[in-house]
Amino acid sequence: MIKKILVSQPKPTSEKSPYFEIEAKEDVAFTFHPFIKIEGLTAREFRAQKVQILDYSAIVFNSRHAIDFFFTLCKELRITLPEDMKYFGISETVALYIQKYIQYRKRKVFFGSTGKWPELVTVMAKHKTENYLVPLSDVHNDDVAQMLDAKKLKHTECVMYRTVSNDYPADKPFDFDMIVLFTPAGVESLLKNFPNFDQGETRLACFGPATKKAMEDAGLRCDLSAPTPEARSMTTAIEMYLEKEREAEA
Image: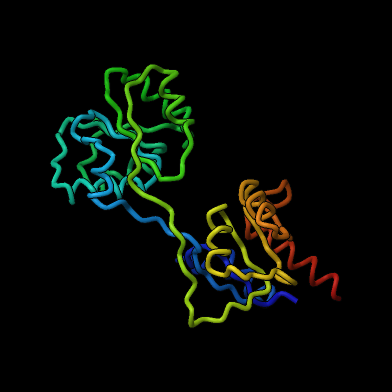
């Protein structure tokens, strides 16, 4: 019988979260603890990449994390960004977040319509004379660079933030009936936190094929995965799983 479920994400801020609805309906208790966290590079670490931010005329952001860490670094490095600097966001939501740090003007802020890199690169290609700086995580592939090269755009990628393990509190019991993981890094962090982890009867749920592969590569059993045609979200998948378990025990 599943009663205690660990979700490796921050606790929802809205009382209307599906997690809380499942708690009330299925008589289970959720605990929220992200197994990974994102931290920015120090100014010293960034300088080691020998990237001069003011050499670029446009900055490209793929997330709000990238925006926060970019402007934090600029402050630490005492860099005053020129008024004519242009900013490109992967989506309108990301682009609007830039106004947390600068005065938002449409002539200097641009974004893709789909939230996907190919669309953003198409927008960037309309500004061929720009010299683009692309802040990224320490975990990334060469897909973005290849797309920009294909459009013959002048660009440089740099690392500004990284994903690190977020330790589970040593003074709290770790006795869950189900653990829900969302990223390969989360799987890695789980095993780092608990190197002698024995799955046994503990159900493991994962979101996305990459997370499932990481789980299986680590020798773990995936009991529940999403998205599926029947369950597009993790909460829907969990609710369906609990319902089937309840029916089986009836």
